[in-house]
Amino acid sequence: MLFHTEAQKRDLAWNWHRGDRAFFQAGACHILTEAFLRRFPTAGFRPLMIQPVAGCRGGHVVAASPTTVFDWHGWSDRGRYLAHYFRKLRQFYPGWNAAIFELDEFMTPAFFQQYNHRAPNQYFHDPRPRAGAFLDRLLIRRSSSTGQAIVGRALPPTSSASCRA
Image (tube, rainbow, N blue to C red; front, side, top):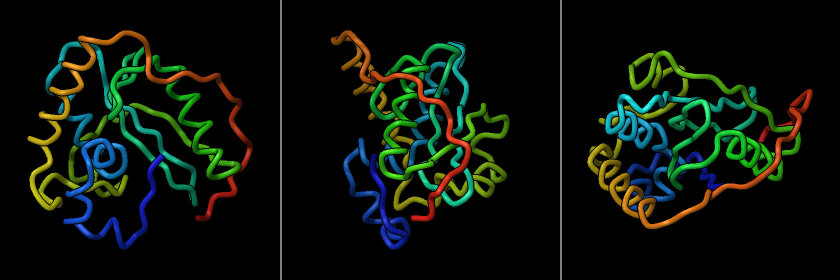
């Protein structure tokens, strides 16, 4: 998991010059999700939001089908991915919890405002070509590999969160 400070979030050049994996893991996940959904419009994937409860960080947008998730590291089994994601965040923030839901409004002004995500024109440069090129590299890597990148087990949700970091 990557987290950066508020000052780092505001530094558009610093954000832009991070490696692709870091860029699309923390700060531009929605841009990569949009690139994937545009590339595969009939594959049965939708934008899925992992929205932390109030006071917690670690929100994320992925492309998801009923069985599969796609994000910066490639494809994963949906159940295993979500279990892994929750487990990792709870290592950093005991009590971390989040809502998981499909987004009806995606890559719109309402989406950017409600979920505090940057619009493409708010980056140092346009991130959409970068997302397309990164997606191309993931597709090439996928064609030459087997197996899933994420393994884990389901964890029950906690009743309350203690996040404030």
